Length: 183
Image 1 (cartoon, one colour):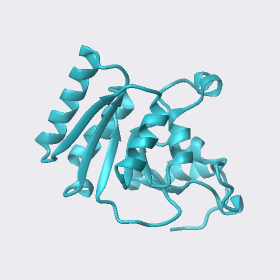
Image 2 (cartoon, one colour):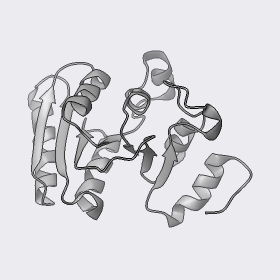
Image 3 (cartoon, one colour):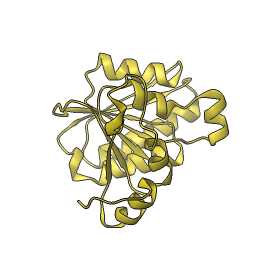
Image 4 (cartoon, one colour):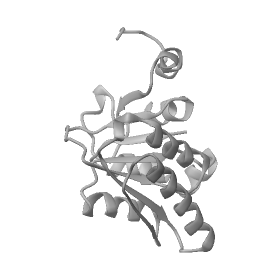
C-alpha cells in the first residue's frame, strides 16, 4: 500500500481497478471511536466504487455464518451473484433474508435467489420477514450469530435517503460485524 495525499474517493477509484474489493473501516483515525457515527468518507467511497466494499468491524471474529439481505434490487442481485461465484464464502452457512410482506412476487424473488445459491453449492436458510428492514436485519444478525452481513448499498436516491434515512447507513452503523456492500 502506498501513502497518498489527496481525495480518498479519487485514490480509491484509481487503485480499485487492480483489486477484487475495497476494505475500509467504519470510522477514520480521528473519529476516536465515536459510537454511532460513521466516517465522513465511507458513504462517498461506497457510492463511487465499482467494487464490493468490505466495511471492517472493530474486532476480528472468524465468520462461520453470513446473511444476505435480499430485496431483488440491482445491488442485492450483484451481492447474490458475487457470493455464488466467490470461493471466499464456500463452507460458510448461508442465511438469505427478504424483509417485507409475503407476496407472490417476494416469494418468487426469494426462491429464485435461493436456487442460485443452492446451484453454487450452498445450503440456504431463506425467509421473508415482515417489518422495517433495518430492525429485522439487525435482529437476525444478533439472534442468529451472523458473522458477516452482505447487502446492496444505497439503492435509493440521495434525497430519499436524506429524508427517510438509509438502511445501508443504519446497518453499517449498528452492526458490530463486518458488512460487505455492493452497488
